[in-house]
Length: 104
Image 1 (tube, rainbow, N blue to C red):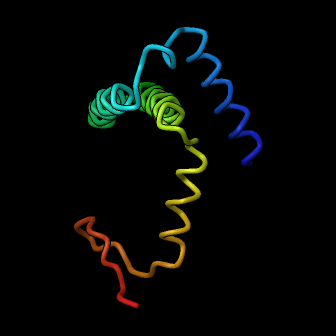
Image 2: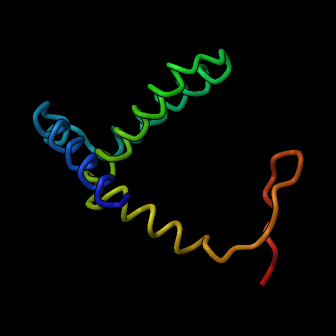
């Protein structure tokens, strides 16, 4: 699956290059765009609009991929780093949605 992810990530980066996004944007600008897209996701989830939910998740990924590239990394590297930190965490999710970590 990682190979397919890298190909699609590169496709998004090429798309961003062709449109001047990588030349004229910044990691901060993409983070702000990500926040806008997350707001659209929340609205779509609230409306239970499956098509808009799917579109919003996709748009979020695009802004994250471009932002990571502008920050000198890749989204996959970021995911691998985050997973390395959490993979051995133990705990549980309470009914109120709060994750309680077990102390080592």
